[in-house]
Length: 356
Image (cartoon, rainbow, N blue to C red; front, side, top):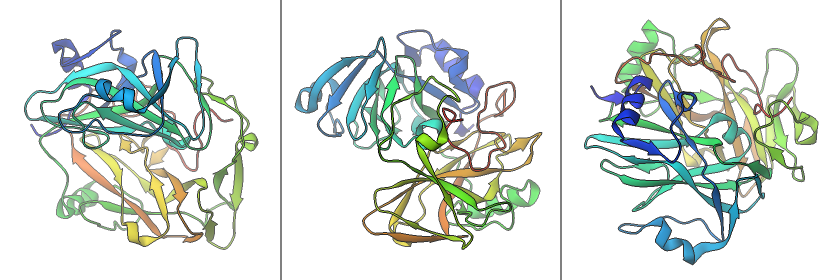
């Protein structure tokens, strides 16, 4: 059946050797609709980001861009503003009819770690075509904070699919009528549901955070270890608007609550480049069961926003992206927040799990 592969199918692919790794894949890596990818032991500092290009291998092109090599075995710092390439522990041999797409994990995006999957023969980031057989690499560029990394850390994840199963606007309308997908009336945008920014919170005047430009190093393994005030400035307003500064990084929250039914997965996607001088960076994947649980129906989407060339006024309720839903090939055995550690179930405005 066409659709996103659930956890049980991912385990089957591992057993069949379609997905293989330097060290055995662990159950903790398998999410309801994706597989976490692990960093290897070596990082290459690059002078520029690059793609392998048609018919070429990453390993053959490293000499053109490599500045130096780093051993991550005892931990190493990836410095803010630099570009690194790290071979991942996993590799894959996709069968006919199956493709894959990668995205940063939630905490990776909230730390402004630009993390993209690159491959041999690649002409675009984060995409694996049918039949790809080869190694996987993570290109990492810390934008706001320097970070300490080690082998085995999981910064991005892979979603596999057979065929295409994106819901049309008519499908979304029918599904929303049966199982509400967003709080309020849905706004349909190009086979997706539009979402907007919340700058008028129900309580108080805290609407977001802006990354401080000269902060310390963040050890990604240290959960709840870092005081917010050392890395972030609070953003408060009673006017329902913010002026975004060029080059600054912001954590905001969607006005709409989001729910992902058990037989579906979703992904945040761009809206329109013409709506303003900013971009929302997407951690991307929403697993089946997100926003559905004891906390109530629906959870907010956290927005990772960067302003471009000119200051820009962002106003309450302004549409900033869309949520694209896909059918699952089968229902996952475990849903998001069910028997697995899910840091962001029931979330509102929330920073990465490293902060307290």
